[in-house]
Image (tube, rainbow, N blue to C red; front, top):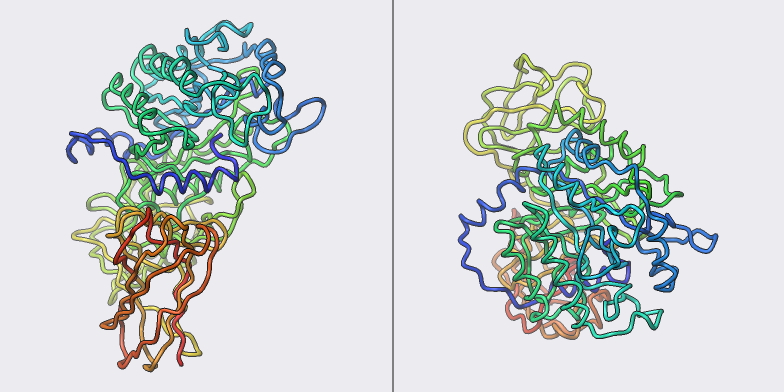
Length: 596
C-alpha cells in the first residue's frame, strides 16, 4: 500500500508545500452535489490484490518483513524473477458477486480496488503492456470487468486505485529508495506516456461508471505538467472524486490519513481514513494480527464523529478468496449497521468539539508512532434535528452531558423499534439521560436525541497548573482554518499549516495574575525560515520571527518574551501568522507560560 516510513514525511511535506492549484469552474454548490453521495456513504472497502499474494510475504524460503504488496521492493526481487509470480497466479476461486455482497452486507457503500499497484502488474486487461492478469496469467480473465458488473448489479459504487508514479516493473517507473535492477532504468516520461496515461485512460473508459480514482505515492517526479496529463483524463468520468495523492500541486477532493484517525479530523475538508484489517494491505500468510470487530466499529464511529469516511482494507489471497477472519468481521460489522446505520450514514460530525475525540499514542502498520483513537466513553454524530450519542462504555444509571447547551424534545435508543422515550433531566449547561441497566449492544449503543435549535459546547477554560504555569499542548488546541491540523507522529504537533490565515487557540482561566515568561517549541524547515508569528494573550501581543530549526522534525524551544497578565478571569491565547515567506508557518508542538 501507500507509504514506506521514509516516504510518509516526504509525502506530507510535498503535499503541504504544493502551491499550484488547478483552475476550476466548479461552484461550491456543484462541488457539494458531486461529493454528496460520498459524504453520505461514510464506509467503504479498500481491496489490495495482486501477484504479491502469490509469495504472500515469503521470498527465497524466508519471510520478508513489512507489508505484503511491497515485497518486491523490500526484498529487492529482480524484475524477471518477480514477474514469474504471474505464471503462478490463477485465482479461480474469485467471485465478484461474493466480494461485492461481502462489502454491501457489511454496510459499505463503495469499493476501491488496486487496478495497478507499485509492482507494475495490471489487474485488468490493458493494451498498454502484456504484464497484466489477462495476458500474463493462466487465469485469463479481467476481474475488474466482473467486479464492475457486480457493483452495478448490487448498487455499490466502484473506484480504482492506480499507482501513477511508482512502477517497479516497467523501465522508467519510479522506485522509492532507488532502483535495484538495471531492467528498471529508463525515462520517466516514456513510462508516463506509454504505460500510466494509456492505462488510466482504459480504466476510466472501459468499466462503466467509476466513482473514485485513488492515486498514490507521488514524488517530485510528478511535476504539475506531468500530473496535469493524468488529471485531464478525469474528464472521461464526469463527477468522479479523486484524492490528494496525484502530485504536481493538484489538491484533489479528499485528504487521506493512513492507519490512524486525526484527533481533530480535517475541519472544513472532505477526508477518508484508510486502514488495514490486520498489519498488511496485500495478503501475507503469517499476518494474523486482526483488528477486533469492536476496534473496527469504534474506528468507524470515531471517524464519522469527526466528519470523515472509513476505507477499510481487505487483502484477498492468490486463489481469489478474502481471508476468513476478514469476512467474519465484516459480517459482524454488518449486523451492527443494520440496527445503527442511521447514526452513521448521512451524518455530520459532533457539534460538541474535538476534546471528546481524545487520542493515545499508538503504532501504525509500519511501526511509526501515531495518534490513534483510545475508544473513549462516547462519540456523537449529528443530522438536522437529531444527535446520535454512541455510547462505547455503558454507564450505570444515566448518561450525563456536561458543558453543553441543547434543547431535547425526545430521547430513545436507536435499537428500540418502539422508540420508548428515555427520561431526560436538564440542568444549567448540562443534561442527564436515564438509561436501562443493560446496553442494547456490547460494542456500541446509540441514544437518539431529537432536538430543536443548535447544540453547542460551552467552553470550559483551561486552569493554571499548581505552580502557576500554563502548558499549552498541540492536542489541546482549537485549530481554525483550512489547512492547519494536528499531526500525530510521536508527540503531537500542529502542522500542514500552509494557509497563513489559519490560527490556533487555547481558552484559559487566569487565577493567579502576574508576570510570565512565554516560550514556544517548534520546528521549521530552511525553506520556510523567517516565518513571523504573533501570539495574543488576551489584550497583550508578542511577535517573533522564527529561524529554521534544521528541518520539519527537529524541534527547539525559543523565548517569545515576557507578558504581564494583570487580571483574573478567562482569556484566549491565539497564535497566528504575520508573514509566511515559505510554504508553511511552522510545526507547533507547545507553548509554555511560566511565572517569573
